[in-house]
Image (cartoon, rainbow, N blue to C red; front, side, top):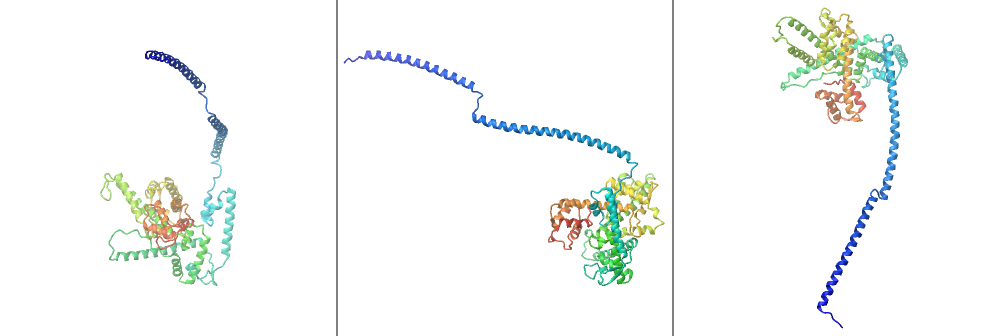
Length: 535
């Protein structure tokens, strides 16, 4: 066997290496060509399928598109309906404006020739139940229906009055403790009916109030003397004392016994007084007296009214002196006041404010109420000097604004107009304000004082309504919540006043936190009959 030599082997290796390189070159070129083809195909595919999505995404998007299309169609229909409604409302508004203008033109034409609409609320003064009942039975009624209601109420009231007037005797109610002291008599006893008239009833009630105030004043004076004589008194400021009140029912009985010098006669007059109060409930003064006597209304309501009247009269008298003094000093060059100071605007305003403060601070006891209830008697007895209580209309207006800075201009003007009606004024220059405080023998007040008390009651109603808004939603109201509501509405209320509110509303003399919660409606009813006014 032939074996190649080393030289031959080297030649063979060189030839093999060269052929392998050529092969590799060809293979590399082929691979590159294939790569370029693949890349070209990929680019072509990307361009061709650039906007193509997946089938699942397409289905989801199709469903969402259909849902949105349905919502769009629905909203489009609603928008179209709203457009029609808007056009209808625009047309309706235009029609209403035209109708309003037409009614206004008719009103302008007929205002001077047609009879004005009556103030139906005045009917409440002659019906049982007062304003509350009248509002209930007159709500939503026409004028014809209101006339029928009024006629029927008057007929029923007259029948009741006639039936009572036909009775010659009253049946005694018995001697139980719950019966008023001046009505306690054996049940088998007959009480004579004296058919007491309104004037006699008013006079008797007026005398009873004088007796009650006299007793309260004497009791308060004795307590004051006892305090002054107390060696432990340190002279520090004492809280404002409430008037010392005696139970009105006992005062009535004691007064009737003293007045008629007979217990039997006192009981007889007591029954007649009760009958008259029930028959004349349309009189505010009589109705107030009977409500206090039966415990339905707090007695402080009456005393607060009298105190308000007394404060006003005192204020007007002081202002009259100030105006006269100012006229004297201002008429003299370099005039000075009683303190030796020059008269200028700042001192004048300060002096007027001082007068107002002294007036308000001077009427906090039963003495003020006593003064108020005897005002007309004092003026009537002083016929010689009654015309001296005079001031000009502007001075009267200024005095009212100074004493009542929180009243609106409408309220002040209402008082001035009521005063003008009372004085039957033809000359608008002077006000004989002393005549405004005169009352009839039966205690009936004039327009001015009636308007003042009406505004006072309106302010109380606003005060109670503010408390009502805070307590609304609570069926049972505990004492702590009631006190909190009061202080929220009236942050400056004295503790003595707050205590009095609680004692009256919750009908207790024990002032503590263990008092049972009170029904919301009962609480409001008690609060409306309480002498509660914002401080």
